[in-house]
Image 1 (spheres, helix red, strand yellow):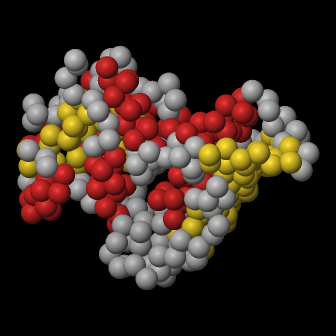
Image 2: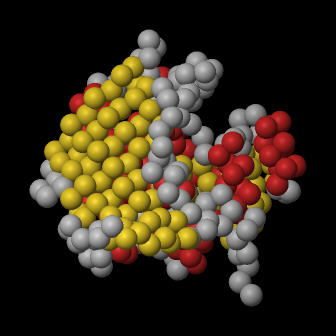
Image 3: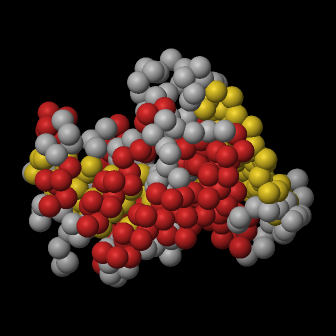
Length: 327
């Protein structure tokens, strides 16, 4: 039997805990290391998930021979530096989305993966969700006809969060667009590709944080209406409409456990239960790519991440979304 792929966790926060819980469901994977700038936080995570090697700095984790691949789950603005440093130490990387704050950062990360000949993928876990995989297949097979309309949103109330939190602190690349708006943007891109034109508008917090953004992606024969926000909740059911049929991804669509296919007014339900929290599927993809000695995934490639970054950059420019640390 092949030895298990050894994972390390960079930034042991809430998302990392969900990820670690799902990683325990993967037979050929094991968490062997965790690193944080706060040794106590790293130790608490290690105690919770039975992690044998604990590091009080990221650099120690990067240099450790006890890990093969690192999951980076820090705030967005640290992704580029940490991902590149990890790859320079020969580690494979799965980095939380967005991969970088902007297209320039994403390009630097992609270049580092190629230079160091290691696997690197943006952790856009919804790409590997079974329901989304099946819907993509139906679209590609022409079962919906020509796609003419797509709607996707992602919103929750966050104005009660601490102003120093990653959601509301501009110094941590705050705002709804990069944190959750990336999901609707991803779905439009997955189904319809790169749009011809983008229109977008945002509203802002007094400290400059973008709080809600509405987007229209214009395609030759279709439109996508997208939304992200921290000022209130939304239903989070995604709709993909074609000339022959419609699909409705169940709320919350980015982690859907099924969908409805509606044709001529008749609905067919597809139940596709998610294993664990849903991170299971991207972990399986990473493991397979590493075993096949690939530096990128065929399902979510380096170019896909570059494209998403370009779309987000365009939206930010249209809306005037910027961060204090950007030039």
